[in-house]
Length: 236
Image 1: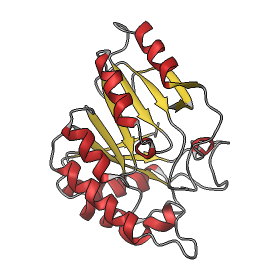
Image 2 (image 1 turned 30 degrees about the vertical axis):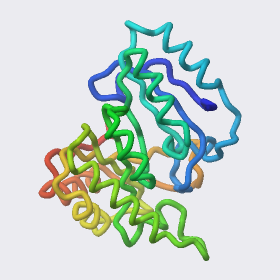
Image 3 (image 1 turned 60 degrees about the vertical axis):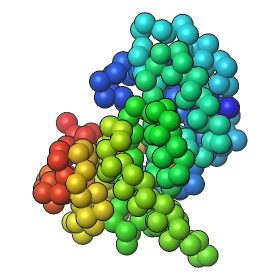
Image 4 (image 1 turned 180 degrees about the vertical axis):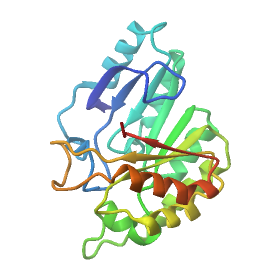
């Protein structure tokens, strides 16, 4: 397996763990606000392979206690379960970031005990999902993807593994109705985070804007009655 990026230490990406973050290329979405647009192609230039990653992790035993896998979309990798087994065999906890389009694979990982924490992006309300993830092009049938996303939400709501839902909030894509729809989709969730969009050179589409603090707080209030904990990230 090819590894497309590595952050050697983070205190933020894996709750409760001192971790490294592993970036895997390839994604089935084309979110206009994606910060990791250079990782959308699975054939992007690689930093290392899985053997080199495991060698690095052996040198960090006792210093790190978790590995966060992000992308791209890690569950597009057919051999991801084997890599997780090998990482866990070294004594590390595993966190997975996912867009939720592979519920069967997610269920298998949870059932086998290969993931210790899952962060799932919930991009928008059902009505706006396709546009938000760049899948509203002519001929692109998004209904099947939406069904898989909702299955992943339902799976996490079962509480078989610690999890969070999160939404990157972009002024051009989100409004009050977006969060009314999201609140309905994740009703009963334990943790939900609104992440404020930050413009960067790596964003897929230029000219997008962050919401104001007032907007972020209003959106949080819309969701709060439906979710145990709602927090805002990415604002000073």
